[in-house]
Length: 356
Ligand SMILES: Cc1cc2nc3c(=O)[nH]c(=O)nc-3n(C[C@H](O)[C@H](O)[C@H](O)COP(=O)(O)O)c2cc1C
Image (tube, rainbow, N blue to C red; front, side, top):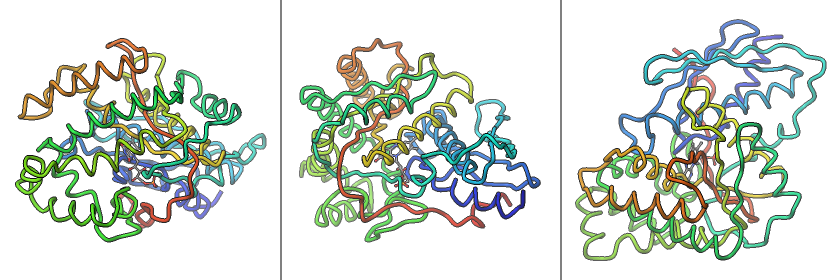
């Protein structure tokens, strides 16, 4: 196979999702049947990148997208991870081999169509076929819990509301929020464009003004109920207005880097399957991440009140889904029917993703 084929595969694979569109990967074409993916994470400056695991999940989403893309060229892609210490710089060696039994994966056409919908969706229920397809997509080693009753969606919306309060009042999260939005944009190649955030124009202007400094945010939060409007638009309404919330449970607690990567493969299969079935999806990872901090006993803020609030979120989350404090939670998202978003994150061009 030619170098050109591998470039076409990578050109598709780069559409994999990553937290805040960080694209924590760089590519090296080693020879005409091997690609080396150099992963990194953002844990040193992103509060949400708990021990780098959300980035490891994004690596998994990338590898799964690469696998699906390769089927379109009659190739079978298999990877091995090489990683040391606390997995800050894992390297994935991907071998691509011609295989006559390979047919183009039905998810192939969804690679570039899949995107996040952060706005409220219709509450039309999932069909049995859609539910089954999503559960099958989770794959071996995982179970997908579907929370779709009005009662459950209301409880999840309340959970998102409480989790968002931590997010918006946590000084350690502020630099991330400040850096991640590309204001007044419909498309962004390395961040989230304003129009895809999910707030109306006036709220966006207020957020843009407030995010100039933590002092402004703290002032708004204290005297102007600054968290209320964004929380209604970004958490409460979307939490209620969807078909279902999905919680992906790994059957065993992820420990090795490969376990986190497999979790990312599973989430991407679920997301591409949702696209195939005409559904939109939004990950909602903050309750999972605050629960990881709470259950690991890790204080993520100088403000001790926020740790207490994270413990409450963790307990409420476990109560909503009927799980134990020791249960492993992997990926949390909402799905539903809605028009395709007009605004989305796009990606760095292939030459910009080249490992120098
Ligand atoms: C591990 C992971 C966690 C994510 N967490 C969230 C989240 O909590 N909230 C959200 O709105 N989007 C979340 N996203 C979606 C990303 O922000 C999104 O995929 C990225 O900005 C690229 O946009 P696209 O998926 O529309 O191409 C997450 C994605 C991944 C892979």
